[in-house]
Image: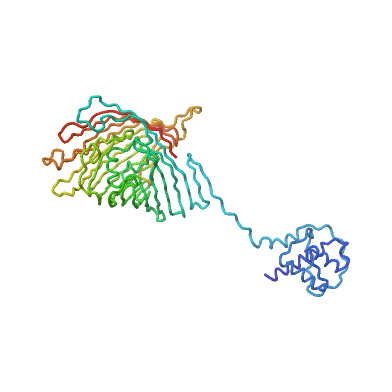
Length: 534
């Protein structure tokens, strides 16, 4: 390396000496002085000419800048012996920069300039703003969901005297969900989600944590999820509230979710295995197991309750427009510290929050004294082009603390179907083993003459909360009532962010009080929801 630098210095020095104006090249002293001036070298009169030339060579070897003008061709290398006066060279044509640039080029490129780090990227797809790092290891996306419900009930004005609960259901409106939050990824293998909800079932509240979770995804096909979570439990609840077909999930699903450790805002940990193409092309297997405690919103008056629940769903067939899936769900209440269990539900609407069937809430039978319970159920769903159908069946039993009493069992089921009049198709979400809302390539636009997507729908649901109702021992009986609901309606997808839903409910509640009198009622209701989500 040193020899190469010296050779380069000699070449450049010779070029510089021959590049000086001819008028200045009268003597060697003049030429050396001119080189010193060109290179910014301070003259040292005490040094010999040879020492001054060596100083110039050393400066060039250290990468000193070249003079403004350069020779058109390289001159012979300066000798390393004492310099004697040389004959006056003939005038040379005006030099160009090529030789000095060629000699200096290796010095300029020896250390490449530092590269500026790549900037993060922004995207704004379907109203969701997302920031990603250049290496895609970090991500932050903002999200929101706002659902405004309103409706009216059509009840009999002359209800039986025994009807004390829900005798006058309230018409009106409420914000079913008013959520804002963000989700993202850190260091590639960790996902996070934080959602705050200001909505409610009947009256608005100051707000509460809806989701606050951290997930590890560094193991292929596995997700470890913890915090305030919403476990993958039941088909209906694994479907996002932004994508469900009706305003509310089926009554049986709403009844079992909370007591058996499901639903949102649930303190717990979850392990999920999900893999597509496991056994054959187009299939998808999801297995979820969760250990949960109480919901965040619940006021704790005792130790933390505990539940163990799981879901396995398998899509066994799929093509460009069709998906077929079956599944099974199981759960167990491992410990209810206060020793009482309550179950119940509203009539598939939250405009009025009154529970008409169940036990353990105001106006309904007393809760069952039990600390443990079991559940199992089956699910199935399919879509073929614009047609979609799904259903679930659940059976569960409570294990009384008093072994002298019989253990009650309950059950329920539903089946729902929908058809897109505009030919759209519900996409399949493999990560949740559920179906989502369709893409809207031609959103509602009066100027363009496009109307989005229209979906007709129907559902029949049964929720039976009676057990041992004819048993000779009155203490064994649980008279929670039986609820049958026919739901008809339509959904209008204006675009990917806005949806307007319409549900017409035909409700039949059959419930007897302790004296055997009819405490239920039949009524109809019309509900609608305006939804904006991103």
